[in-house]
Structures are given as C-alpha cells and as structure tokens.
Image (cartoon, rainbow, N blue to C red):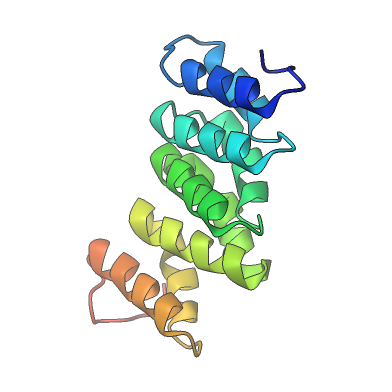
Length: 152
C-alpha cells in the first residue's frame, strides 16, 4: 500500500501503521516521511510522534524546512517525542537553518529541555524575533535557568 500510485491509499497505509506497534513499523514510517505528497508526509510525522524512533531524526530534520508549515510543526513535535537523541541535529539546524526550520528547531529544543541546548537558546535571546525569544526563554525556564542567564 505504501507503494500505491494513489495518494489516499498511501495516506491510509501510514495511518494504519500508526496503530501497529511492531519493531518494523518505524522503518516504514521513515520511508513515508519522504513521500512526494504533503498529506502523507504529515501523517507520517504525526505517526512518528506516537512511535518515536531515533532513526527518524534525519528525515524529520529535513521536514523542518518543508514549505508547508503544518508539516514542519508535526516534524518538530515528532522530534520532541524522540527527545535527547534529536538534540545534536536540532542544535545544528538552530544555528544554520532557514528561518522556519530554525524556529521549529528552537521550539523543539525548548520543549525537550536538554541542557546541551542552553548556549544555543541563550544566543537566540539576542535576536530580533519575539517568537524565537519566547521559545528560548521558555526552554531556559523549563531547564531551571530562569531569568538568571549565564554562559555555560
């Protein structure tokens, strides 16, 4: 079904995979994260957030640059669900990514709450974006750094 030329069939295949708890499922979801259709990629990102697997990090990082904002948001949520294994790739993207991807990377880093992100989040506080500043501050607050900022 994942190889069907019909988008609806591929979408439903991914939707069904989201409900199957099996060690082979994440590999199929990773494949679906690279589908040519936006709705299939979105469904796969949502499914990956429920069946977290660190092998999906690279494919999800790619989706953070997707022109469709829902896709990048769902990919970021899946990276949050994966947690600490996603942090190094998110740090790279937060430093060098396109604006939308950087925003989602910073938001994901804030929600993961890994101390490795403190320096990057502190750097974001110096930017001219209220949304970026909000998520950087939120991430620092969640990690207990609060309003006392220091250079690690």
